[in-house]
Every structure is written in structure tokens, then in C-alpha cells.
Length: 90
Image 1 (cartoon, rainbow, N blue to C red):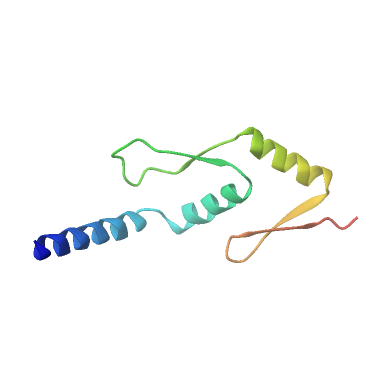
Image 2 (image 1 turned 180 degrees about the vertical axis):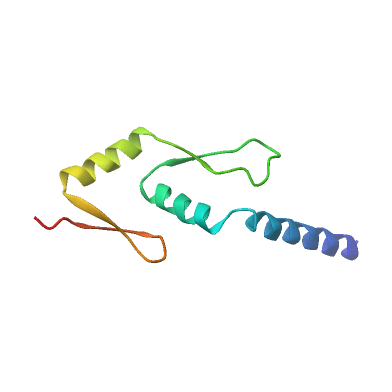
């Protein structure tokens, strides 16, 4: 029983590592940016591994962007692909 449990854990770990390698670095950077801008991640089709990530524009997305517009915010893209929201120089 212990061997079966160990084998199961090993298979799950290998599957998870393999799935992580299916997303490109660019997809990971863009996904994090879209999440920071309040886009909603849309679940992919079940059983399809490696499909491109999809995001939905929601009311929360629009509200967040309108708030930044009203506050005069500027989005600065950092060297690692993350976003920094700063005050606009006027």
C-alpha cells in the first residue's frame, strides 16, 4: 500500500511539473499583467492541457481602469514583466 501511495504521489508531482512547463514565459507574464488589471481568468476546456489562457473583461475590470483614469495613474512595465501603477506627472 505504501508503494502504491508513493507511486501515486510521484505521478501527480510529475504531471504537475509537466503541466507547468506547457505555459510559456510570455504567457505567464501576460497572464499576471491581465490579472493585475482585474481581468477574470476563464477556465479552459476540461482535458485540454497547454491551451492558451483566456481572460474575460468584467465590470470589475472596467471599474478598475476607470478609477485609474480618474486618478491620473500611469502603468509602468517593470523589467520582469510586472506592473507598477504610479501617479502621472502633470
